[in-house]
Image (cartoon, rainbow over all chains, first blue to last red; front, side, top):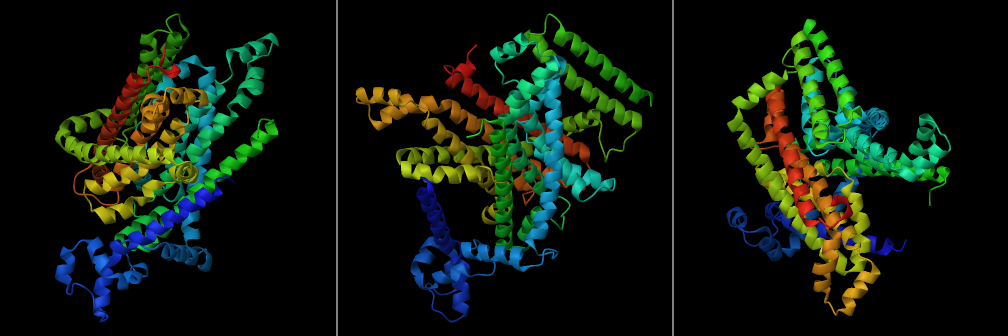
Length: 305
Length: 281
């Protein structure tokens, strides 16, 4: 709690900066509107204003600053506009409505969770195989590590379209993308975790005449848990990005990614920003859920703080 | 069908070979370490080729590797243009700007403890968010050309690098800092000679994570609007035309660019942090 005050200060500073940034970003449009409404604006006329930078224009017209925070389609919406839009599209809309962010969020979340589940389980299984088979380790591990350095997200549009052409639509293609994005981080983290017992620990197991299976269940598996959770957190964030990007190519009508895309098609900036914040909140909740599971698990294992 | 059977026979043979090498006397050698994954990768490619040809899969579902290689060789000029647009102009410039900005901010954060305690939780929080979602906004602000892609990359790499540099600058012990003080070192002398070198493993960790993020950001941002050149543009347009061989060719370029980018950062890391235990031996 020692850092509560600094954090609040930083957040407040960001919000203040955001409001100030709205002024130059939206001033041109605000000046035009004000002039139409008969409010004097310096300089007069569209043409000289278009030549002018946003900051000098804002400096000369302090009386229309307030107008920059209430526009319909601003270049940069003010924080309260985004907050109101978020509130209206989550709480006040029915969840079955096409304009409800809860609805779109659920479409994205379900694909994320299904894909993440598949990817995480497959990743753990492969990691167990890698630790037990030297051939598998030497064959697969370099590729798993290399896959972390390349933007494999790029094949997402292809998966969507190819599966679409064979008649598979909706949740499954997005889940596949989510699955392979979370798969590799989990493999790499889990292998690291299963290998984390020191030679001394392993020797101790051997002095107790532990079988390979016992060593695995009683030493390697518990030792891997912290590593597993660390990679699960990375994996679920990657899964969410995968599901969102998977919603872009077919111009999908549902999901948070579709909200981002349709917002950018129609210049609905407030919609883009609220969708962006919805994804951020979703990501934060998912990572926090994994972190809570991690704390509970480690506590039950007796190593938690 | 015989081709499909051949694929599985090949798989079994290659796997047997790999098991022999991995459990044989030469398993620890450098040649085995490179050879085993190479055999595995080549076998997968060969199986892919054989199965696609054996089952006569249509090109719109999965093109064979040979077709992808053909397309790659035939469209080198286009691929090069896309590479320059997306990687050099978009990703690389954004990466440099983002990392420098993060470095500058990290110094500020390091000087004021209040700022560190405030910004670090916010920074680690933001680093976990799907920042690539800012792409439609930044494309709207900076236009379709590479500037908007660079802006997305700046936002994407900024926080991971900032968090890592700041964590790294905390790495020195009280004893080491006291030693600098006994030598009457100024803040900047202590910074350049002790704390920054000590932070380097963390800095490079951030730089390596960001190298992948930069490419992802630049490619995905192009899905939201781009001029008629660029890897993301080519991928989305070729997917629309069901020209999947072109998509795969772009993915090959992305893979080469990604691993080269990462490799260069890792190489510099080895030169700079040669003293660190993880780099020795």
